[in-house]
Image (cartoon, rainbow, N blue to C red; front, side):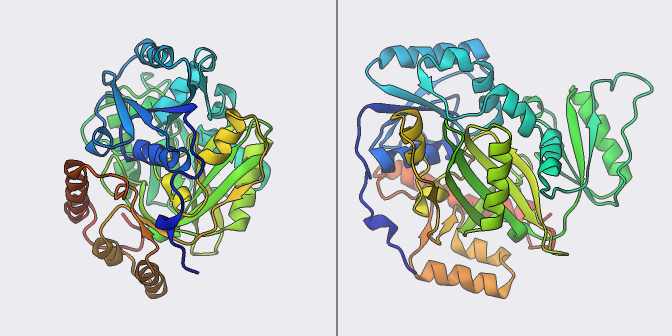
Length: 425
């Protein structure tokens, strides 16, 4: 059934008593701001070091600059200054990066005096968002995950240190168990996720991490076959009573393939996956989770099993896909944290194409004929939505910059992923 997104009233529920403050500066920050603006007509404050032009020239964002790699004290100082400047507003603090989620958890006591915080606390974060602990939580709940080993670098300086050998065949996937300790590292050739073909490549990675000063934990997982279209994204919100009042999901079509961005979807079709929703809700409620959560799941094409890969303690970069599908995530959150109201579960049920890339580029990588036909049909029915191509934005320089950035995706994919493969790497 067709929907006409652009005819929905904007804002849905006008109110001028709230002020969203969003840490960061990428398209995910813009998505959060767009959700607030469409739901409540809100102006937003972006606190970041180098926000994108889609934010700095937006008609509903103001920007407060903070230095790159700011300390907790420096970032707190900016956020407290913002709070002091707006005593008449109900402030909501948002972010969509692991570094900032950890910052909020560490400083929740000070921040909660001024801001509503839709994030889990530090104990829950350690219990679920550490990827090794997440796998154990899934095992307790009877939820499938890839076979995994952990590699601790805490004793890497010891001459006797040796990484365990994976008990499953190569190729394998390697990634940090915790985002923050890895995200702050800088070294040549850094990747968000490593696809490793041989034991020699894995040994080389261990040496690179040691030399870069990594001293946390890395994971090695079996590589589940299937391309990007085997991935699923789930977004949820758990209110202060412990009830999941927002749930939605999407079938990934294409992910970014730049080394530091790999794994981030750039095109998805919203779709209901009730069994995945049930598993996600179980993990959240059984572990005392509160706030926004974003799950990555892969469907194993060999047997159809759903394998949960991780949960991010934040709303996720592509958060606006939920609003485009009829379930603006800020509405249940504001009802909970600002208005103190219990509400019925909101579900994203409209089928839409959420995309950040040109249609011709996307269709080049969708090789399944039925899925390709589905994408083409959705585009033809006018249910294709692009986060950054916002009809509310009138600044010509902003919109030209956004258009040019979209064309730049062609160059990026030509460099990092020129042709589709069965594994998408």
